[in-house]
Image 1 (cartoon, rainbow, N blue to C red):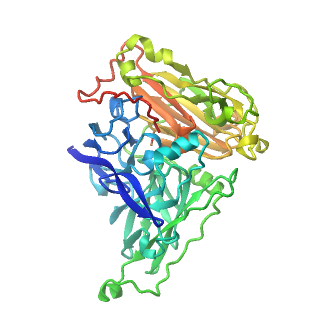
Image 2 (cartoon, rainbow, N blue to C red):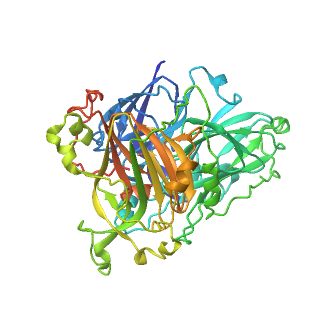
Image 3 (cartoon, protein in one colour):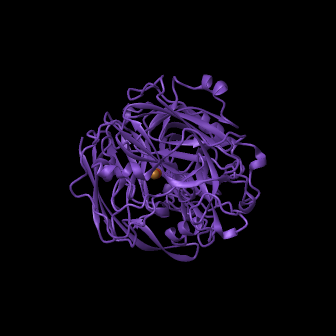
Length: 575
Ligand code: C2O
């Protein structure tokens, strides 16, 4: 095992897309940022140099950070943010994990431009993959281009003063030929393939706003891993990928040599906003051919790329089946699903209303007095007002202060009703029938080693979106999913306890539910949240605290010696 070292200089650079020059906050001048490529068991050292005007942290999405919660990168939970003109070095290792993960800023909406791939290859080499050794490995990062300031967009959404929306979808930072001011096929992402070869696409959804359907005309994918866990090979012509998820898929260049569009289509829930634009992006898969090489590599102009037939932009069913078809692959690193459960949680994901002042009920008629928030069991998350990160307070057990700040996330919602009744789907935000909600730093504490089962129930009152729920520091077994309301009597017997997919970001289907199980074996304070950026802004977050029960949690080592200290401005949002 070796040490892989990177320096990330985060600063604003001018980038021009859609005929407009925008100041984009990026790493090393690149969008997306640099890929970190390591071998399982390596140590990773990243020197972050913050030359941006923002407080910053970097989260290593999906890295378990075993006994290393300090490196998890959540502002004011695991660390003080890196202030402008300050530096901090993250150190962690990737033992016991292989596949595609990624890294991103964990402050407000900044992750839309501050992100990149984190690729972990097996120690025994590429021929030890549980699938044919690929000729090449290609990262495919689906993202968004925003031409307004990302922090302002986040603030505007939270305050309901701007209806911020991204301006284009991207593949590896390229907008493609469907946008004005790009226009040429060559402005999209180009993947050159050789006939007959097999490529491993390492696909990441780094977008804030949308799940995507990805297709390549004339080709099929074989999905072999998701969230850096191998899955049973699953052949499909469409990949559905929600924000935060990664999918590794084999692509065999077995079509007639030519040019084929690779299309990423944002999949949006049918309601409440049928007007939101469909911001498709497309690139090209092109076969190298000898004739072209003889012509000096120029592309024949008559060669019009073939287009794939895409699902409807409001089709949520294809995604439901795609996710339901993923099962885990038996493999040396494969873990058994624990058969007993110590703690059970049933969490409804919804939309609630609170008063701007924080009270739980105010007259909806006093228009601006209430605001819509995202909820879990009728609580919406409030970032604690602390001058020291919670994990430090917890580690040093400073006067039990952490405990006094937390509100326990209840085991179940305050009332039982038909959560997915279509009659509850709000026709518009104003008329929505919202649950009364309280705002608090919601958290659950688990004894180290406890087996926890969580059922996430989507609700119609969340304008019927799907929710990619992400847990830091752990992977979860995905036992079952279903449409409508979860019913333990009917659904527990359907649990897959044999070969469930293992994920860090679990897809909760629109108007449906998903059941997961995990072992809370990693001491620390871990963010658990929806990976849609606007759901985080609106409070769909809870803290999962794993502790060994003794007064001072001895299993978590002390914070790194060069840990940042907090400045005076603690008012950072985490995302
Ligand atoms: Cu990828 Cu808490 O995030």
